[in-house]
Image 1 (cartoon, rainbow, N blue to C red):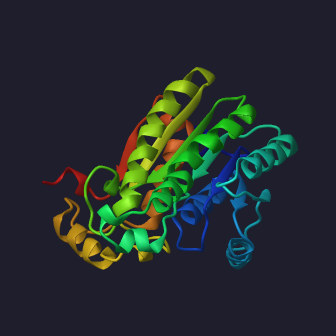
Image 2: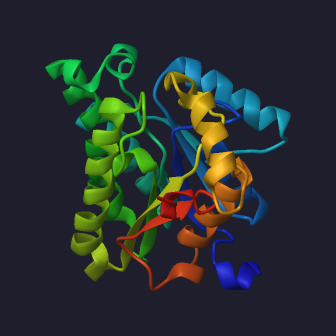
Length: 259
């Protein structure tokens, strides 16, 4: 299987591990299992402490851990220059970064503030563009970039509000980036994961209701797991998906197809 994946010994950057329940952590664990070199970025010291604890408790060792604030161009540039100059080549990138202010999720969407809207877009959508721009300099052997989206990008989901609009912009960005970077053999795709109990999901007021609805309505009649998102992420990072770019891949038990 490792021969098919072609990820053993390859350098993959994982952004956005908040704790061991993060989708990004699930992907990272799977990358370790198949022998990839995993490089982590973190935003604040608090995230670094949780990341180091997760690595230690699982007996895992990162190739590199680098500070990167996605709201600052200089920080992104510095982080990827450090990674690229240290390792030479970047073969994959997992962008699992999103954030909106709590009040912009709790209030009606029409009450979204200008600053809240800009912050959600900057953190959750523009950060993919800025990151891809810096990472591509070291993606000289072709590469795969994946980002994490959600059904709220295309449908109204109660309590998702400004984050849904940010994810819609993220998905459009995936398509435009795929077009720009395809000639460099860099693929860009999004994983639209079903509802999973993560730290970010806690910020959505109706999350427990959403879980119940998916369990009832999805064709598979259940919610998906972090591990299932990780498995599809590995497919999209690997050579198994070498002909796929600009796509939104749903890992939601089929929930998105239902009326």
